[in-house]
Image (cartoon, rainbow, N blue to C red; front, side, top):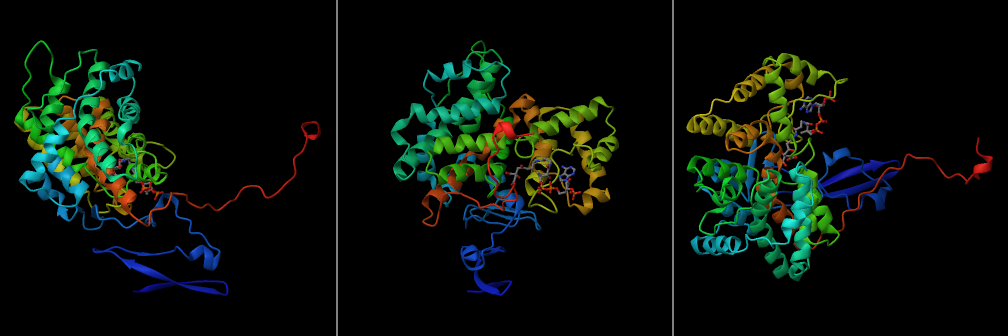
Length: 428
Ligand code: SDX
């Protein structure tokens, strides 16, 4: 095994280097503090791995993303979302029997307890969907207390199926509550994306048959969002799970982490940014200059990524899919042309080139969601629906890892040194 040597003062420590199966290696610093008295300081964990993982591989320089070794380009073209969910959860693509059994068990658990309607109805109609979804996800633990033990593999299995099955219904029902329409119950004869679209768009007054173009586009989007290694929300899910909280609580934390505009919330922000640009006449140069101005908090939403430094492979697939879906649906969305122009101008500007800022997964996804009939503030819950199997796979990997410890980072304290209490009568 190769080693890294760290010298500090009169101390020298040799630390093992763990080589991954692809291009990544990590120096194991488990003994660093004990042997040197030093912690590492790594804001945002840009240089730190908390664990070894087998779920997804990302090569930020080459623009590669693989789920359990399979390129997302192949999965997006040939797989169904539940097939990918199975792959992420169990590490292998299912055979026909395994997929039918998995699909059947998910399909048979899509119903929610009727009481959950009171949960949705406790919120203001204009409550943000991510806030409602996080509450509903956490509430599932109270409706299904029979399988909460994170140390019991059978309970974990049951709860994973329940979450995969009930997330679409929860999202559809919170949507129906927000738009003052009746709840639509799942139809077990529909596939996963079709069932979700049916529950969202159907009305008791008329038959709704999901458009195959829309179903196929949603299937691709769900697959492309399914996992992305140790991103912010996956880390939140694992962190909460590291305390042996149940999987519903852990995923609820992931939903809330994803809601931030720097993370999954960006897909909503991108659409709102493009609408602002359209309202301003479509001249993107003014916004590009604002994004470059460090004194201006405005950022180009949907641009930049901690890992991808040449292109986000998901963004490339979604960009092509946006053109294809809008053409098939006969939609001429001016925001797509503004997005194209924004990408073109930004990628020829030194500020973005020097900082290696490219469109990420959130840049074009909202244009498709909009074409599929979803309102802008529903975009991030659609991201959550796609990311659920990745969260579950990452959580399980952490729970099953014998080396897992509770997440408890160190700090470098820079506050006041020891001082005595001063009674208020003696304070100036
Ligand atoms: C997702 O981690 C994942 O895998 C996430 C994700 C997943 O699948 O889970 O891929 C999903 O969250 C995609 C990212 C969505 N967020 C956005 O689109 C929001 C806009 N982008 C950023 O805020 C930013 O790029 C991040 C948060 C995505 C990445 O932040 P980093 O890696 O911490 O980079 P940084 O903030 O240190 O920026 C480096 C430089 C800075 O300039 P300087 O200090 O060098 O002068 O680039 C600048 C930043 O100001 N910069 C931007 C910018 N993003 C970074 N400038 C203008 N517009 C931007 N979008």
